Image 1 (tube, one colour):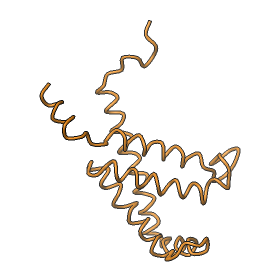
Image 2 (cartoon, rainbow, N blue to C red):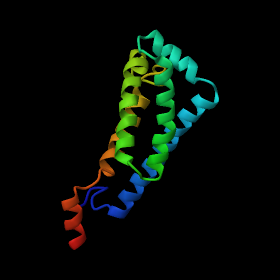
Image 3 (cartoon, rainbow, N blue to C red):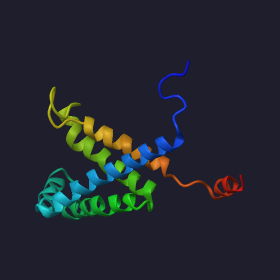
Length: 145
């Protein structure tokens, strides 16, 4: 007897990964666009300065621009793995600096915790892995079969 999920069609799994790639990219893009359009880059930079980051305003703008360019690259499947890994790194730092001190839960049993960050980081790592390019020899061998 097969367990639920065994023998899933590869095309369905690929479609699910495509949906995850698009949704995660849009979530990050919206985050960066909101910060930029609502004038929140400067306060973000001030906060980074206050916790000891040199050039806080520069870092805040760099992160914001990465949150606009990186998702665009992910959406058009260009440098997808590298863009996803970069976002995972940014979110990991944010989780450590901002969300972890508030605990695990985002809502309910807590507020502003790390759980959503962990979910996004796991999704970004899955996307990076799924779109990691094959070595040239492996790609060549796959086309011969």
